[in-house]
Length: 619
View 1 (cartoon, rainbow, N blue to C red):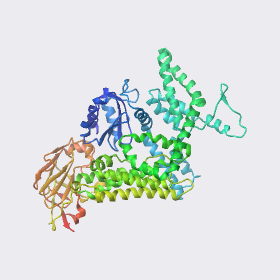
View 2 (cartoon, rainbow, N blue to C red):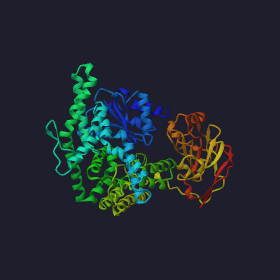
View 3 (tube, rainbow, N blue to C red):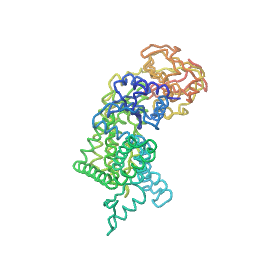
View 4 (tube, one colour):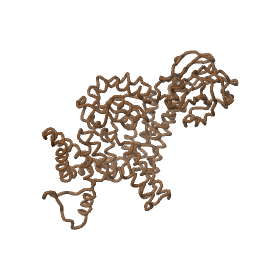
């Protein structure tokens, strides 16, 4: 299995399967609830190249993985023999603070379906864009089908939340899902509609008056009802004879919890939902620009510590009660502030490894995944992260002042612009949201370019006045490919620099010039070199081979070593890479190619190791 080695390492550093109470994942993180956090080795786990960062917050041991977190989650579950059918451990983890417990409950309920939640919101936004642009009409069959696909999750929220809340509270999730189904049952919705008619006769349950509400899209009522149901279930299972448990425990839960929800829990929870929405609205109306600046400044700090989950239910509640939410647009500049800072690092640095990491982080950040940019690029350099927060505050203030809203839930990314389109069509609030986000992106990038890079990281060494031909020899034998034929858009687009690629015919990588080893990835799949004449080269063996955790690779040099043309740098197992399903195409990139007038591939369709490959011409 592709991530088996990483899964074993993670399990070992969290104290083994026996120390795990629960395991879920969100967009980029594995979230462990451990019995004893002292048994976990966060520092040791951070050394694994497959781990971006380890964060202990909200009562959780969080391992930041990146976009492929779901695959790693499955590998960890497979390696540890964990399943969804039963609790991982019957023992409780360490006690945490009230805030930590709340964050743990919220993340446990919402993370299992966070991907489809974001996808539904994006689809709603794209439909709004299609209507505004005249591509679709709301009465067309195409629109109705896609609208049903985008709205189903939100309309039937009580069913989905009933299932995940039931699992989180340790009960039978199908019982709590049925309770959610009762809240959205057509008979109950019809009863609500009838109660809104003039002269409607009050209805009740066993003579007790019922206040009817439409619970579709609601959040808080089903969560509270699920907690009550799970409490009843545990008490019933403890008291009932074993022959009666399977039937009568669910009967008690349904027979008591559903009426109790319509009589007490639902009205109280609905009142609480409205109070929360109105309280947020009052604060927002008081000083929207200040609210936007504050959210833009601190959002990424909250993400680092996992505290952002406390705001997710509030956004969803705003949408359910008010029909729109102003918090999410204020967070978008915070996201793009960090993206802009990472872009500034990419444009400024001459370090091949940092440039590649920053480039991939920008791509991920555009789609809302900022952890690679924050942990891998901005935080280690400090100033880019600060500039990202400052720019996020300024952009958030602009968005708040513009009174921008979203009309479906999602997470801050490029698709959020479509979700900002009001039902009545494009207006100034949309342009204010776009302006604030662009300001955050451009400002953080500019600040990072000017003052965000330490001299050591920027590495502004002067390039000699003359550069000869055939400066870069081929580091391996094989078939030469044009760079735009590489099956990876980051390399093929020339984002990391100009060069060529080789499909290797042997298992060795040699030095292409006299110089030194500037960087070497921990996974040994890529190496950065600096020639004596100032040429920076990145050799990346295969595509996505970082996921192999270094298994097929052997390094014969280390960072700082002097090398001469033909010196052995790396060895790799071609067959192992092929068997693992990865492409062998190896980009050879001149990462500072913007300092040269031209980079030309001088090799033919095939090349031998040590033969001329690339020629550069000075500006």
